Image (tube, rainbow, N blue to C red; front, side):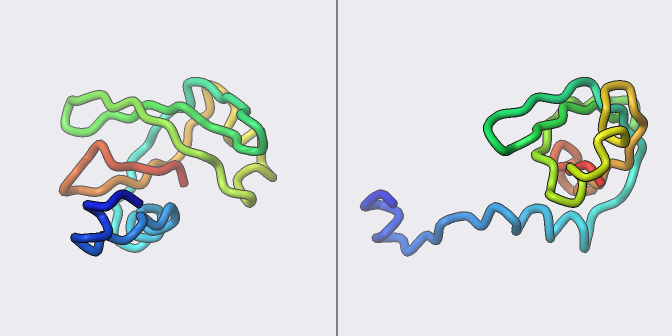
Length: 94
């Protein structure tokens, strides 16, 4: 943490907090997997979804449970996307 963060008492961001928030409060739409990439032990999926006529492209790191179903997250697959209605670019793959 930087000195400014310590002075302002900022906490380190919790990587799972965004996922938990979207699972609890997010809305669901349809999306399409564009591509996948493996970096070390992480599998990253790139996906696209459309809301109100606007196309969004994003990526997400698959959870352990999601990695157990590789066909579900193959390029071209249709998946559920959970997004924040107040910030529609904030999303995860279901």
